[in-house]
Image (cartoon, rainbow, N blue to C red; front, side, top):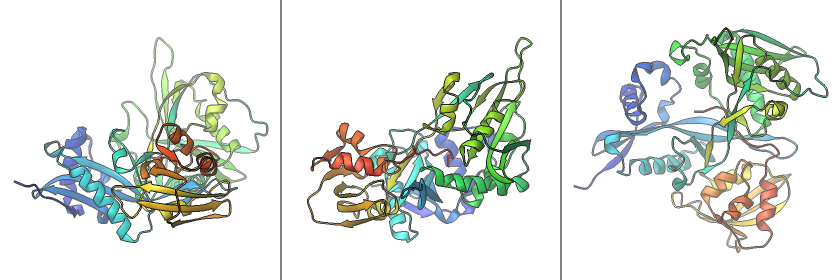
Length: 418
């Protein structure tokens, strides 16, 4: 019998079914779940279920975010509307039946037709091999550092008058400080996601189910400069003892600072707790200042988070970001899922702004929308993709010129996983 796949909107009344499919797909311990808390961030008008022959078989949800992208010089980043794709799950009984393909197509077409103004869709992939075929390109990378006791940071040339304070996290009292610093930090580096209120509420909660065994409740270190908050870190300490030797660990959950002095003071405080043998960082940009300050301490490095980016509206997305030099280039873009993108586009851009319009002129570069997603945040260059045989240069010099113009001053990173 032919199979029928339909995609319908879900409501909060479908919470239990949504969690059941999510648990079945990912295999986590359902006893650790708090249905109300775990689904508090869901925008129920953007929650969807795919049914196979009438049976709910797969789910996905979308978050309404802002994404920081390269800005016009001298600014580092500016914000564009972004659809955050998450909770993508297919029940094991219904795998390999086209449900994921149907949901991604539905997601992209819904963004295009909704009028929300979202230029891009982004996600974190549970498996890296899944989403490239849907036009998503790997656009940010990060790493976590493990700093041992005795780590020293290289001193700054001008430390400045900065103060720090360590205390228990008070969600109501500290939320304004954390949001203020985070929102300002989003404009300092591409790849950051502006969090809606529900995500902040969830991030600052501290239920026992989220604490590693033996870890304390959330603590916060705040940084102030001339009375103004300029940095913060959320952390947990887990005490432990070896042979009469302290082996405690500090796990930094989230940390941001608005200038080198504040960042240096913040991390100097975080590595100075007594009885703590190791400090692990949240995901950091590959060129984060801490990687320079602690370069002589042989910090261990671990893979961090990687954001995948997909251009849903090529013209609007390329117009919205900044460029470091003048370029006038025609891009021949292929896009199997979004036919409105499959065309030749003339991008005329520079430090003063950008215009991207459809054209019949001969193409200078030919590439898939996936490569546009990889290069969009300025960390991956079109030249590197061309070297890999993924971008075809039809006009000599076009690849180098675009790579220079698209490059971000600082490497993009996405420290908040959604």
